[in-house]
Length: 109
Image 1: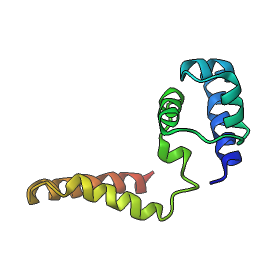
Image 2 (image 1 turned 90 degrees about the vertical axis):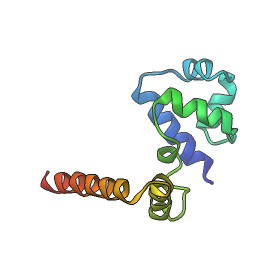
Image 3 (image 1 turned 180 degrees about the vertical axis):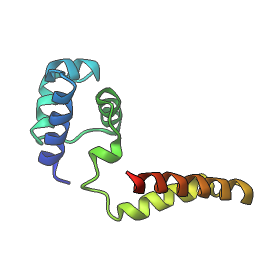
Image 4 (image 1 turned 180 degrees about the horizontal axis):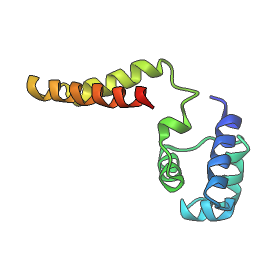
């Protein structure tokens, strides 16, 4: 994992919402020094810190780690499978119809 690139993405997202490094560190309960090291790619994050960070920044972990997830299409397909696996056939068909409608409207744009 390229922690420098990850830190850069974190810094960009922090700046988009107008937070200082110090305020973000305070909000997610880490030290200013640790926050700086994360943004410079000098330190990795614990899972707890990562979750607090993405929640505070209003982004998803998927977005933050998109460069590091292999087979992103397969991950998404597996997420769809997990959602529909325990549904009956009628509900699966309804979900498929909704998805087709969404893509149809996106194609029209």
